[in-house]
Image (cartoon, rainbow, N blue to C red; front, side, top):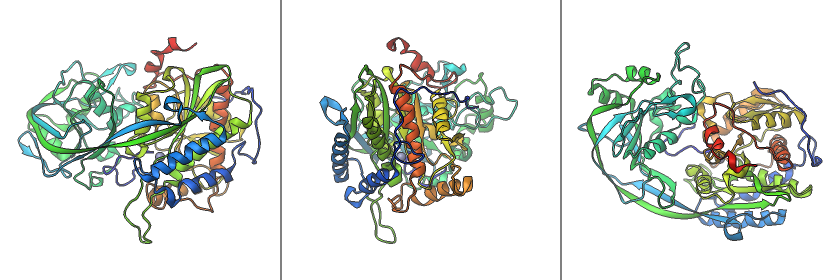
Length: 559
Ligand SMILES: [Zn+2]
């Protein structure tokens, strides 16, 4: 899971009835309750990937070289064939690292902004300077264009070379019961439209020069005080020539600074927020302009996704993809014991171990009829970059990918009576999950805090944006109901992990992990993928999903 640093330096953190599933391949049992997935082998893989030798698996480092070599070797030993570029195991992923240089100047409506305390900005547009001269500013409300919800905040406003100012989250986040908008954007659950990435991308699509979101603690899920650095560092993939240019500056403005800016245009922030929760909202041009002059240091990092496959015997051009991310946070500052490696054991060496064990399980059974693809992404922690690069440069067409099944962080506290579903109501893969869980004697529990928008913060999202139905298992979506200790013990595991270990040196392999629960979860994705691999079924997005329309657009490509 990705949290953009340094903005997020602190972690803030009607299911369908069961129907029997006909499986063409017989189930394989090697460990009670975990199907073909062996907790001991999961542990062994994580122990290797999270060892000091791999240096925390930072993209572009010696740790990456070791990781790519290890993964390609293991993928081959398992019996996969190369699934990357030009018949190899990898897909080269060029990454762009940018850093705004200090001092620089940012002026909004005649007022000099202090970077870090008034505004937080970065740039991912290629170039060595972010220079904006007297650009007009337009307030665009929540900045949502959602045809499937009959919602358009832009009303045809021209944003070319202008600065778009957005409200945080989506239109119904702050709605009270009875307001027409209430529930239209998932209630408290965050939708794609509430994500800052969506707002920056939408601004870029409309030709804006900059995109700035008004920070509010409730809607963002974290306080402005989490912005500790003057900021300015960012990453992106190197985008193909001719693709939409990102905005030159993107970021956040502190709430009171924004309120003052609106006031000087004769507008009231609270009133604008109420108005923006209605379909009648129209964008407003603000008084004054934005000018900025900041040098940008840029460098390129060459990284790689590792991709293997098990070719299908009958419908080889139809795919099911399993994925996790191999990258972690590399070397950091020493802790009290002098350790510097942030090993990313749980996040996400365990997910990678999971997809490897799924591949092994498939190789032990009959060959799948559809092709299975196993992807270990780079750059997830820098902004879902390996998966995004893949989605921009697909090796297996998204149109004929039946599903992407992603593992990112699994709990290590033992077997559970349930599995937590992230992003309820998205696709009918949720029904598959219910069936697979029932076969294990387990149930499915929706994510307790959908307002955190975890569904939009892991690699499966890069595929979802291209229409591929996705399912994510992520052990920090809420505490599982553990066989030993129940929900309280599950919640305690989540809070201990997120408070102490997440992205930290403490995210290390431990001999005393109980991986039976993780193995159960991995087995769920194995079962779901196996069902799809021996059928011609195409899972569907549910009506109301943000991703349904793009999938429907490619319906003709599927038999
Ligand atoms: Zn992760």
